[in-house]
Structure formats: C-alpha cells, structure tokens
Length: 201
Image 1 (cartoon, rainbow, N blue to C red):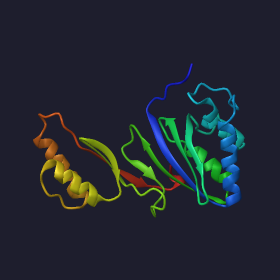
Image 2 (image 1 turned 180 degrees about the vertical axis):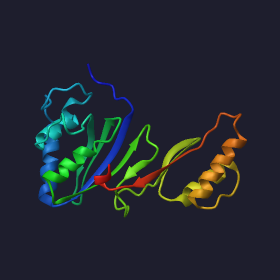
Image 3 (image 1 turned 60 degrees about the vertical axis):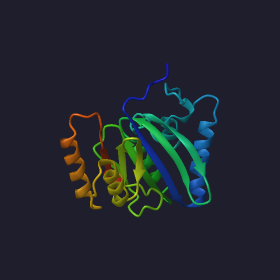
Image 4 (image 1 turned 135 degrees about the vertical axis):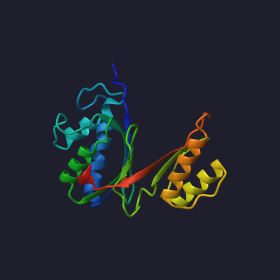
C-alpha cells in the first residue's frame, strides 16, 4: 500500500558550486530514480525516488534524517542542479544539510511552502534563483509575485480602491475589506516568504 501524503510541504532546490560535486550528486540521484526496484523498500508512491534512498546513498541514516517524502524534476545544466520535493508536514531541510556536509563545495538554495505554515521560507536572500516573495490567493487565481507593488495593484483592482505599495497598507486594506464583506463568499489570502538561513530551519 502506498502512503498518502498528509499536510504536504513543497520545496524547490537549486544547487550550485563545484562541477564535479554537482555531477556526483546528480548521478547518485539519477541512478536511484532509474532503478527498477528502490534501494530501500518503502511505501511511498514513487518508491525509487523516496528521499530515504538518497539519505542512505549519502551515508546517512534515514531513521535520523527527516526524509518523509520524494523528489521529482531532477535536472542538471551547466550552472546548477535542480530538484523538487514533496514531503509530509515539513520540508526535508535535514537532507539539504546532509548534502552540504557530504559536498562542501556546493551552495544550496531553497524555496519551501507548507500547507499549515504561517510563513513561507527561502534562503535566497539575493533572489539569484527564487525571486518570489509573496503568494496571493484571491479569485480567480492563486499565484506568486516578486514585489509588493504587484500585490498592491492586484488587490487594489480586486477591491476597487487604490492601495499604497507597502506591506502595511496591503494588509490593512485586506483586513478592512474582509470586515466590510463578512456576508459574502469571497476571500483574499496573502502569504509572505521569510528569508532564513539553512541553519535556522
């Protein structure tokens, strides 16, 4: 029986640095995901791409390193290695720290989103790979945006009033609009990415 992911967390990972180390990590992941049988038997829906397989291949203990999920979209080009993870409850930050330990010549960037988190997380302070800083869930779309100016314009158009391009003004306008429209089935949800270091998560 395959395990159904509960309260999923999603993380995009971009890794740069020493070319040999990048290729070594990529080859490990590629060989794991191309196996006919997973390295370690597990109940995940893509058992060959279970994160615990990678933890084990890197010399770690999957009972000690949080790895309750799978990876996808593995891609290597001249500049960077990319993959995406889906995991239960939390993003697998322990795995990223293990990769960093095994491959000290690599620099790891991530953007992580969890269903029940109050804020979304990234360590890409300079926006080299992950430029998004806001998620706006508002009819008819749920999408990501780089700047508060974009968000202020979209929310302002939706509620029919001008909003100054600042976080304080946008949040205040949303709160006021919700107070004025308690009786209608409409919503505006705004989430902001928090910039953290890998050591902080």
